[in-house]
Image (cartoon, rainbow, N blue to C red; front, side, top):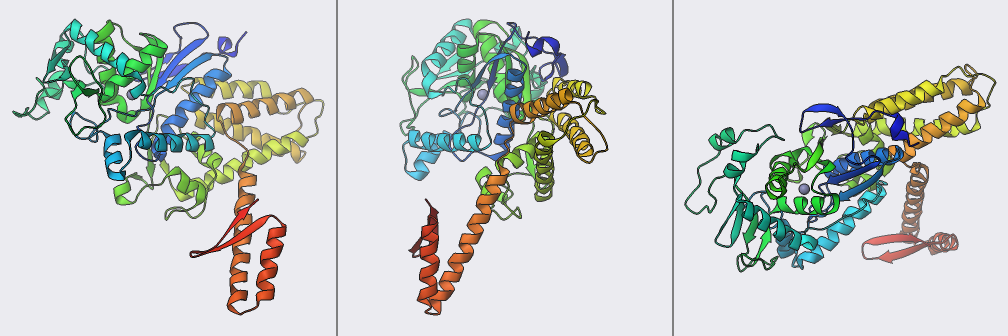
Length: 493
Ligand SMILES: [Zn+2]
């Protein structure tokens, strides 16, 4: 028997606006699609939070014994600068500015994305498809939608006909918007606009001669609209209707609304049973934005190289901080919040160490079995990780009381407690107890910097005996100093 058979999991479905009991299409199997990054810059910390929420959800499904096919795409074409119909492709623009091939831009930032996610201890998705690898599938869907009469071609571009679609289906059902209101609130089309209505969106855009990312199609050279890739890749790998589609809250409209419209127009079926949206991350109470300086990259947090935080924080501490909020709530990152999370994280890790060395007695003062079910109840309630963490700290209190001799625990309960905490902390929340060695590395760097400074002072005083001694003894320990124009650096062999 698998764990999921004994647990009732509820998921907040953005489509119904309600928490619903989760029933997958095929028992024991889950198909989940999450909109991945557009790889034209370093991965944003807010995006990391979104992907981390779905990593935790993926981990919990696996923990429950489900076989999960988790598809998270890489957007490497078609996402235009203003998220709408006009403007340059985000990747093509970066390629132009940095004098690179678009695929060099894609490669550089895909590598960055993966390396940051690895530091955060993400599990890789089952499939990570790219938009440029699925141009043929996208063209096929456009042909299908044209054939069904929900799109029109004009001057080498193809647009989705929202008005026509809305006659037979409900456009706006995910975001709760009504087409009439949308029409009333948008500007009139100008003479240059090709679209019949401002709500229509591009399925295929004709490539102007200067547009470098282009593919041949029945309508001439062009490139797919951004919304289409996710319809093509999700249905290709998960079927016409699949269990879960996730993404950031900001993608609900228009991106996900358009995905629903495209899928329903092409095959007549509602593509997704449960829509899930993760909320955003703010910094010091304000929206993160590079232009105002209120922004942090993950790497800047890990290195401490930033003007916002007082020190470096390990990926596990940042992950723990993010897991302390429910994925549908806005989370505010600040120095104080990270310091508090760091303290909490160490308390939790210390308790796990203490637990291993506790002496067991005949009886338990702590009902571990019912506590364990409370942990599951928290996660079964729409993946409520902050409540789970509160239960973990309840266990920490008992562990400390047992250590101090105020409570006792039986051998069996001790083993159950240890196994339960480990599986929730490491398997489900995805934390790693690495911070000790990371802190050690930081301290070592500080000591070496101090010695470099002392060696410099010795040299300035022409005390070469001392400066050589520092260099040679460090070399014996496997730390090489290298003098350069910018000062002295070191490497550890
Ligand atoms: Zn998407």
